[in-house]
Structures are given as structure tokens and as C-alpha cells.
Image (tube, rainbow, N blue to C red; front, side, top):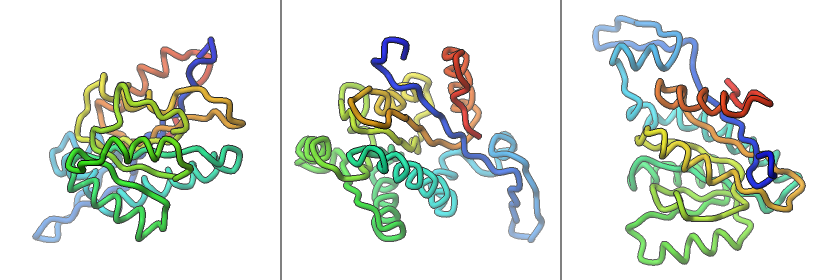
Length: 205
């Protein structure tokens, strides 16, 4: 960051202070955060990233942010990292049909996946949805907004995904944004990164 090789990241941790869970007997439980919900083992993180309401909320925020970035940098792109091919297809459908976004899907099941990635790299398309195709070693400098919706929660993978939006270019807007849910491990990784960049607070709640 100091050498102006990497953008300074902004990490948006999506949470909910009023979660109401109703069981089959219509008994209600209230939780004040996703971490509290996960700790009680009522719903898992893997289930949350599949939840349509939660997906619409986090995707909507990321879409709004990318639109703001593209006002200054029309070539800026966004990456959504899904949990599985089936999950990627669900997200792709939401992005294209519900949000009416210019989006492309790439998975290992496509024979022309390398061509899809290269075409996206050279284009001005807004969004690409992937499972694990765009990680360490895949360089698309115009990516500036990312949604981490993978079930993989290791710190290495978290940093690899964040790294996809950190490459400095010659654009007029060098913001980098990562959207994810406030899960215990992901929250810890975000705060650890925050300590490594003392010049600013990189976490947005």
C-alpha cells in the first residue's frame, strides 16, 4: 500500500441485530448477531450464504458500491465467490434476473472457462460469478468489489480473495471493497488485517 502497488481495502462485515428464528411450534428466539446465531447452532454459516433474503441484501450492497466506483472508473468490475456450482448458478440467476446486472458465470464445469475469464478481463462487463476459478494467480486488475460467499473460511483463502481487488491500476478511483457476512473466523481475519494497516480503519460494519 505504501509503495502504491496495492489498494487499501475496505471490508464490509454484514450483520443483523434483530434475527428472529421461529421453530415448528411457532416459538421464537431472538439473536443480536450472526455470530450469536451460529454459536447456538441454530443456523450454520453455510446455510446463511444460501439464504435468498441474505443474498439479496449483501449482493444489493455490493452492486450499489460497484455502481458508485464505476461512476469514476467505468471499467471497474466485481467478483462474487460462491460456495459451489449450484450456489454460483443461484447467484447468477439473482444477479441477472432480480438485479438486472451485466454478469457472467464461470465454473470448472465449463470447457471454455479460461476463455470466459480472459474475455471478462478485457471487457467492461460489471460482474463475474465464480467458485474457485478466480483465486491466487488469476490477475484481473479492474476488479474492485468482491463478495466472499464461499464456505471456505481459512485465513489464506480470505486473503487470496481480498487480493483479487487490490491491484493498483491507472484509474481515477482506486477503492477496493470486500463484502462478507460477519462470521466468527471471517470477522477475526478482518480485524487482524485492520491491525496491519494502522493508518486507517478498513472495517465497515
